[in-house]
Length: 191
Image (cartoon, rainbow, N blue to C red):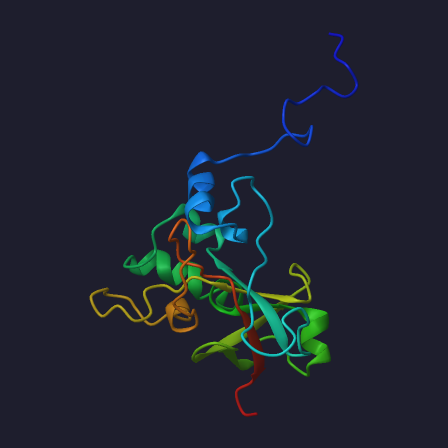
């Protein structure tokens, strides 16, 4: 197969462009705005409301959340045996806040310690720290809770409720919940 080294692309830039006629119509009616650019481009994230929006404080982290593998592959909310098998042996990994071990040590924090996680836009939660080298030093990860506040479930009260930590923030185009566009600080419970 003999393809030219630089195949031409029939766009204004000569490169592959993702274009949206719907966003073009928004631009024509509302004027040019970064979130209405009809050619897919970068929209800067807003993680902080105050201070330097590009620099993290020593105890400040980007926030991520999700499910640990066993939760992704099995339903545990109201299954007593499965919930106990998943949560008891590995409490930190499956229910605690993951933080880089080197970063935790620099902050005077240790594995298994109770910490307060404060969203810089809304309330704070308490959880147990799990230190690992499997996460970036500027990021923390909190697994989804196991029905912690749902009184209808027969087994509840495990993990940290993510909704109490996340600000109510909607993405303006798709109207999706922006659940990780904020930073958190982490401190020992007694500080």
